[in-house]
Length: 466
Image (cartoon, rainbow, N blue to C red; front, side):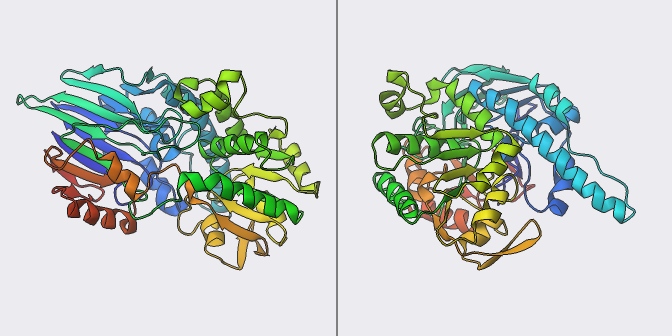
């Protein structure tokens, strides 16, 4: 058995890991590398393997840095099955189409610039037709149901508690040399007691684990403190007649924020003000959430579902669908809450809301998740006094706040807790992926200090034989 680390190695984007088992090739994830266009286009376009040689693909969840290059994989010759949970398949239906649309718009912008320079136009990585072709390869499976995907290889998906449908992937392997190996891929690990979705179902009794390390050197705010802090923050802004602008990822984060606002509103802990979700993708994703109550936790059942109430809809909440509806929000002067994508403020309707609200000291820009280096969100979070939006310079006079609790990734303590059913004497090899060096290296040192021996932080292109 060999593991080839391709994407998501020493970075938090472009997740791809290739397993060589019994003469067959299994691809874990096929995510888009995200970052500067000049650095990612060729990397996403050209695979470091022949897609036609891949026998099977396994997908942990629908986020684009894990799923976003699947249409390109199929376009370049992949003919096998793609196994994922049923909820992940439903989310991919909308997210990959959205990705194709965004690429089309992006390429139009790029080609205008290339034309002015006398350069040949470039093509998008894939189009809607490629997404439709890719979706025919998906097979939706339920949690905790073992399925043989290749001779001697059985897969089980366990709930990872990260977003709707997210999964840790367990492979029970009977190797050609007679060895029996239990292999685990954590995917992205969620937080225990996070709103809406279930707690992570920990992979256990593993011989080998590939594990994410996004927040391997971070510690999140405790859950019991968050609701009160969130309510106090909103009330402070409303009392000064301001607006709360929340950049949030359309899938996962937006639904969590809406859920908590609904709960606070029902408990009369925040006043009756308008709340807008301005993201077509978030609207479509929320409908997928509604279709999968099996992924939701006991609290969501107790507070909402048992009484037939919609966790993601209430009287003060409006989902904005059209551009004209979005623009009309700019003319409303009274207090409101606007949730809009994207979370890193690198595109989407959130840019318009930031442009129209960032210079007003009565307003609050509230960040609820991770922002990569050099993104607009990170610049604002880091306290820059002037930022560029749509080519114009704006002074940051609004208040700025970050609440890390809403992150969908486990912190260091929670990652260590994820290993509690995989003691050092059992787990022979542990590979850290999906983490920047400043997070993964301290986490590796921590794991070594508590007894884990073979802990690796592989480079892209590194191949390990087990």
